[in-house]
Length: 79
Image 1 (cartoon, rainbow, N blue to C red):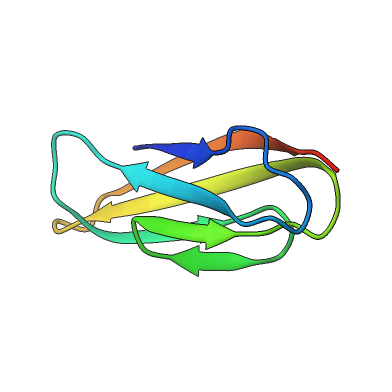
Image 2: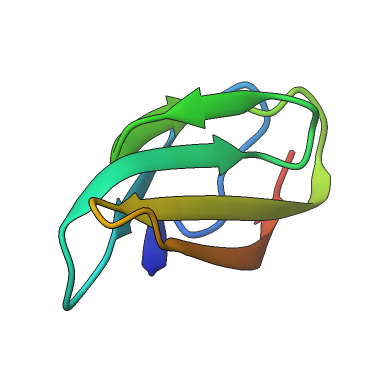
């Protein structure tokens, strides 16, 4: 599993677009944890942070067979 963030360095109070994908298997569930106690569902989600800083974003992709593929990246949010 992998994901992209657009823009790569989001700004406070501006929605960033998070897009997840899985190669080689059929994904049936995408769950997000944005590192600020907020969560999301879906392959593509939008999220805005309230404070600048570094956040550990985790995407968990689950396949039709029930196998989970988690991936975590640090996202830096600017003022």
